[in-house]
Length: 156
Image 1 (tube, rainbow, N blue to C red):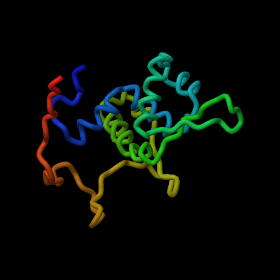
Image 2: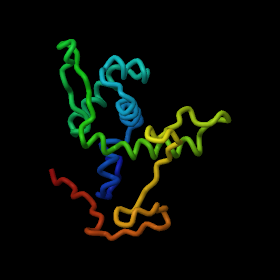
Image 3: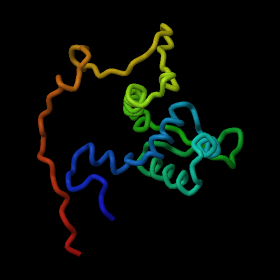
């Protein structure tokens, strides 16, 4: 099977190997909105059962979600975001922010985020961890710690 990441091994390619599917992001969106059980995911997304099962298995296998028995009904399974899954929140917000800016219809975005503390509209931004200033794409530099690698071909 051809790898979605091509021949480069980097963090973006590795992440896309797991998250590079539209259903994965929609499942994550629903999880961030509080959806926890299979039937809710199924109903909210209108996704085929085999696809939902497959994507949830992927998220669980990679430690992004975990399965838990429902306290009220032991026959039911609940899916919960792990710490690794919660770290994807900014990525989901970035997708939403881009879609709101470039794909919203004339009525504007379908959902608006607000800060619970002050009630004002929230806009995700990237800040420098040291000085706290907002950083834009043209202000970001990088240091290549190890060169991009091409995965070795199997000899078998």
